[in-house]
Length: 463
Ligand SMILES: O=P(O)(O)OC[C@H]1O[C@H](O)[C@H](O)[C@@H](O)[C@@H]1O
Image (cartoon, rainbow, N blue to C red):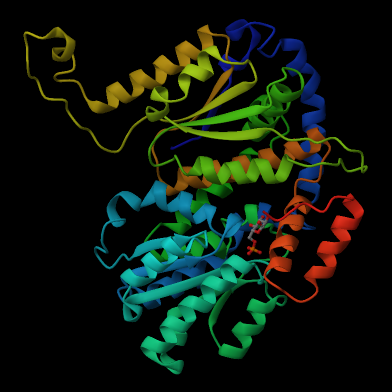
C-alpha cells in the first residue's frame, strides 16, 4: 500500500535541541486541543466544509469520466483558464502524474495541458499562437464566475474559437466549471449552452482540487481520477481518528502551529525531494497562506496570523538556498516531501577508473544519489538545529496524491482552529481586486475604491 507517512522525529527537542525542537510537554499539551479542533472541523462536514466529502462524490466522478471518454482522441490540447485554487491543483496533479510524458507532445490520444494562471500577454499570446483551434478544448474554471483574469482569457479564447470554427461549432470546444447558480460565467453557460460542471457550495477554491475543478482537467489528460479519490477517501478515514499519534493531519497541524507559536519559526519551507511533487508545494503554499494568513481571529481581534510558505526543490535548492537554511536565522522549519521508490532506475556508467573523484559514482543508481543528497540535507539541517519533518510516499501515483491532498486540507482546517482564525475565507484579496477592477473601469468599483481610501486615510499613488 502506498501509504503517506509524516515523520516528525527531527522536529523534536532531542533531535534539534529544546530551544528549537518540540518537547514532550509541548506535544502533550496540544493533544487535547487538537482532538477538540478535529471534532469542530468534522462537525462542519455537511454544513460548509463540503470539500471533506469530495472523495465520495460517485455521481460527479462518473460524469467526469464519461465526459473525458466522450472527447478522447478529439483534442491535442486542453487549455485551462483559471487562477489560484482554480488552477494550482491541476498544475500539481499534472506535474506529478503525467507531465513527464505529455508535456512535449500529445501521445496515445492524451492531449497536452496548458494551465494559464496568469494574464501576461507575452505568455497567453504565445500559447494562443501555438494551438490549432480545431484540436483544442478550453476548460474555463472560476468558482465566483467573475474573476477578471479568467474572464479575459475566456473572451480571448472564445473569440479565437468562434472565428476559426464558427458560432455553432465553437461550443464543442468549451467546457465550463463554475458555481451551479451564481455568477456571470453561469449566466453565459445558460445563454451559450456550454457543457458545464459545478464547483459545489461549501467548497472553497483552494479546497476544490478534488471537485470538477481538478478532476475534469486531470481526467482529460488521462490521470486516474478514480484512484485519486480513492486515495483521498482512504486518508479521510485516517484523518477522522481521534488518537493524536495515529492521525497525520492532527500531528501535521500541531507541528506547524507549535513551530510558529512555541518556537518562533514563522517560515514553513516545503522541500520537495521529487521533481514530480515540486508543484504540489505551490498548491500547498496557497492552501496554507490563504487559509491561515489572516489579520483578525474569529473574535475580530487583530492577530496578523499565518506562516509564510516557501517552496524549495531537492536537490536543486541545495545549491541555492541551503546555505541560508543551515546557517541563517532560526526562523524556519522544514518539511521534506520524499518519494521512497522512484519509478525509474538510471544507472551511472563506470568511467575514469583512475580518478576516484568521479569513479566512485560508477555502477550506482541515480536514485541512490538522490536519496543520499536528501538524507545529507536532513543530517545537515538537524545537526544545525533546524527542525525538519518528512512527508513520504512510497511512489508517486494517483492514490498517493489523493492521500497527500486530503491530509493537507484537513491539517489546514485543524490549523485554523489552533490559530483561532477562519481558514475558509480570504478577505485580504478583496482590496487588490477592487483596485484592479476600479482601474479597469468596472461599474461600481470606483466608489468601493474611494470608500477603502476614505476608511484607510491613505490614498496610495498608483505609480
Ligand atoms: O475560482 P475563482 O472564483 O475564479 O477564484 C480564483 C481565486 O481568486 C482569489 O484569488 C481567491 O483568493 C482564491 O482563493 C481563488 O482560488
